[in-house]
Image (cartoon, rainbow, N blue to C red; front, side):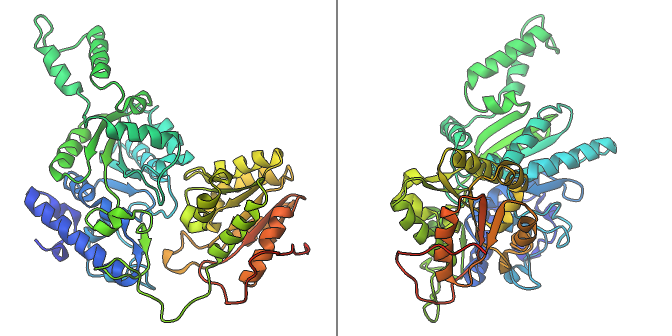
Length: 497
């Protein structure tokens, strides 16, 4: 079967492993060809090809709901849901969206361009299903990077308290968000990945217990406890935290082995209550260049598929605003140890990877946790540190209460640097930085500024760091500056007002 013939994911039902592997190969070819030609997210989708095929082979997508976290990992989903023909228009005007979009396709059950929303949405659908007395499956697919977001943990906390609500969470664990993951959750998942691949032994243990003389078909409460204890001994660390939170745990399983994936998903669908299937994948799988540089090939502008190199611009362009910001900040930080740059899993996007390389002790990555990043900055400001919170305009929306409650009401000197302010183009409506002027100007005790060019941005960085009368925010666009001359140092602050 050719991929172009698949207009409904249920067409995967009944196909052999060999046929499914051929579909996987075609998905990767189409994915690579399209992104190389027009740009887009590359590594995330390549890593979930087998996961997507195997999951859809075990679901009835006329009834069941699948919620993808963020959506840039869902390019294979798009290719299996009738968008093969239009896939070449990806991220173009009136073309296929770069993320999932309810209005684009009936199989896009929930749209998202920001991380950590999928479990909450899937749980909401599952609870609505139960309230109506219906019976269909709800599956959330979330990356290990998105799992560092507080909202995902809030949803897990809620779902684990609902033992009679059927919900499957598929953890796509590739040890990455855009950059390598940070924090205790990532460290725990790494330990799990290094354990022997296991699926919990409940069913097998139960069958063996039932063979014991005098026990018969049922297990007493005492024997249930013994069974659970033996389970823990059999797999002492793997998934223990997940199970303590109220989920049944399967994994970690090989995210590129279709047979193993299909078998595990089928078993997991039979388990009542919340279930988590832990799938270990490789970001960029199938394209060696992307596998080696998983940060650089998270997303790409048009590039040469044979060499992996970006197609050069016809003439040199001025430096990007984010690079001018990062270079200026790093120069200032070299002479002032109180300056600390904070990012929420966006080191390369904000340019703070430059600060990280030169001054790692003055760099903090909190993971996908904008709310925490902002209040962390507030706490640091209380102790005389000069925190610089570099967060995309669209992502700072997620920390609005923290800006008001933790910083502005207390008149704390935190410097917000809002990259991607204004129109961002191909990333679409979930990423437009259109609202920051409106949502910041109405807050007391904050100054909002926007540079007219990259040279003025340099002076505004100095202004923001030296401002002590409350919070200050600098918004600047995505892309390149206008080409004015830059100074390497000696910038002066701008008079407020």
